[in-house]
Length: 262
Length: 262
DNA sequence: TCAAAAGTGTTCATGTTACACCCATGG
DNA sequence: CCATGGGTGTAACATGAACACTTTTGA
Image (cartoon, rainbow over all chains, first blue to last red; front, side, top):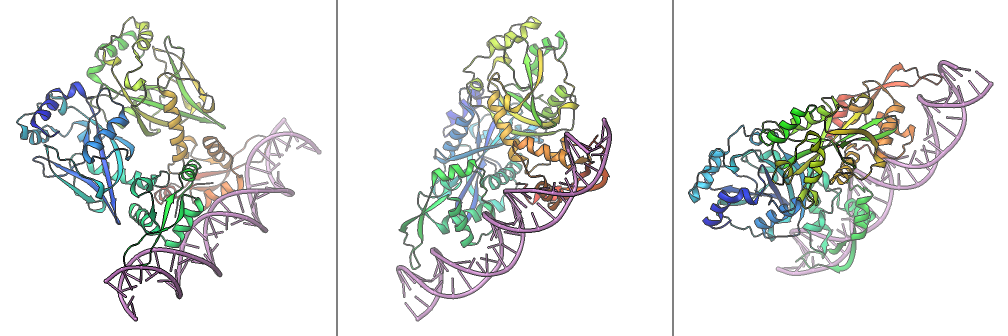
């Protein structure tokens, strides 16, 4: 939403287009070069940051909605996107903490006030999705009501609005648990990648270190990756070999519940 | 809902008490003696079976709602109950298949018709929860609109109404994945249990066999269970020893991500 | 004494961990 | 030639898998 008109239309007619009481919040993990970050936004007039999110259109599949919202923020489609939990227990989600004033701060930018019975003031449960992107590929889409964006290191997430800290925690837990069962590398590495690259990826996401030799052995033994004949030039150093994923084997390994417990 | 009056009140005023567009469906796994079953219900006038479910009250936490619904069906509280997915993609969940006639068949029992714009005809996403119970402990609560109940073996689930087959599949997958990370035994076994009992439990839930000796060794090594001095009399056979869970160690092992991969 | 169920230990194969030196490259 | 980063193998150890006979009990 980039124009005042769009925002006004959303405020006044959003309930006709979207399902009320339900939203989607996205924890967008951005990885690059040994750093794992999360995309945060700061709504107009807010001191705290929060997660990007959106609503589900009445004629839209849930998964579709999640992909649309993600694409609206990052301009990227076909990303790895995973539903992980529904949040409906915390005080914010019970409407025990009124978000109305919060909303009014934001929407004051377009000169509307959100009443107590407005659809945006109603109790809203939120479905959490997490995505994985290379944050260098992301060109964040500016929105009228969002004052600022930032990529924040996962270990340094500040206090967020609503229950978003809880959502981030759960997303991170789920990501780390699922890295063993999901083709996570596919989405964060180029088709051809070096061993140090995939090695750094796993170390960063899991927050611990792996022995280079054992790591390579494991991935090759499981047949998840295949070494190529090519090498990459990387400046004044020895050239690393390139590898690619063995898609068939990767799939098979995942089905067999293969564990990449290094 | 056991009286006509209650049902009428639900149909006419339910939207004031409950959040629209959202429901909870429960996959209630019932285990006993090497059998793993699911509780199914048959609504009045329906040919197919479906899962028990319910709605979230406007002033009720999500988890609270799930426990209430489960207690309404089984009369049991404090059960192991786990949220596992939100279903919002299938044709039923998009309102592409009209459930209105379906509803009318059911509610004809109390002599009301559900119109196209009735709140029960609107698009409804469903949050899936699974529970684990000993089905011998369950006294199913009769409800006016439910003609029949049954416990159906997980390997013999018939075609269900709506997208409930999909929900059951996902629940079973999740249960099997989580048995390694959740204190599942606690809820299905008495405080003191024999090794053959817990052994059968794992075999049944995971659908495969484990060597008795290795199974015992593993559980003892991980410190999940503790052997007691008592034995149980079981007729014309050797008396098995009793065991109990080592709660502290169980907790610790789960946090460490201990894997019971037998 | 028999049938049914439970108890128990060892061996072998596999997987996991720990560890250090040499090589290639460009400046 | 040097600084930097990448490549590689082996030995010790721990874990998992396979396997069968004996004991207890009550009828």
